[in-house]
Image 1 (tube, rainbow, N blue to C red):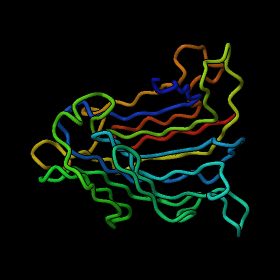
Image 2: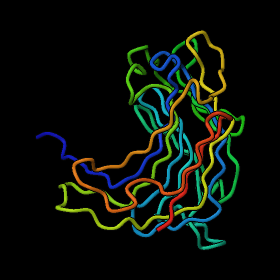
Image 3: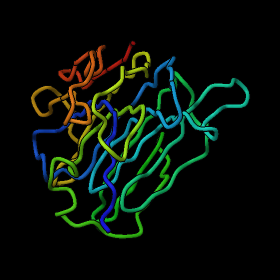
Image 4: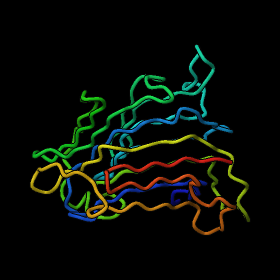
Length: 227
């Protein structure tokens, strides 16, 4: 039997370099985490990460017991590696409002590294050739994602969105081109796009993030969500 489909009720902001879109070999940015948030139900999460070659690497918080900080009773953040290989860091290592620098890069030997705040956290065991980052879903890019639930079967309609967070800002964005140079992201070499899933159904308002500050001209982009 084939794998059962999964329908995510989620919102996304995606920053794609348009220069060298399918040949770039890394992305890095500084993320300022929201100072406040509301995760309303089991499984809901906020992820902010670099993507490339099938990897999604960044920091996340989730409504789940192991994300709960016993000192404050709030859910806090850790680093993660998702994709063809997986890893993650200590729970509650980063807190609401922290500034965290993340970098995902493909090396000359075609292995992938993930760095957080200048420290290498992960090196892939396998090498990843050019075909692994040559599509919109695998090229070097940046993503802000939030999800409140998912279903094995598509519902007839979508409930109201109830996850919120204050300003989450990305700055100091750079991508690594095919020659190995790091290029500052700006409005001339990258685009930002909002989207949501499941695409088969009309999302209740607001369909996407309802607080957006697009300053790609200066290498910055921010979103928030109020409900």
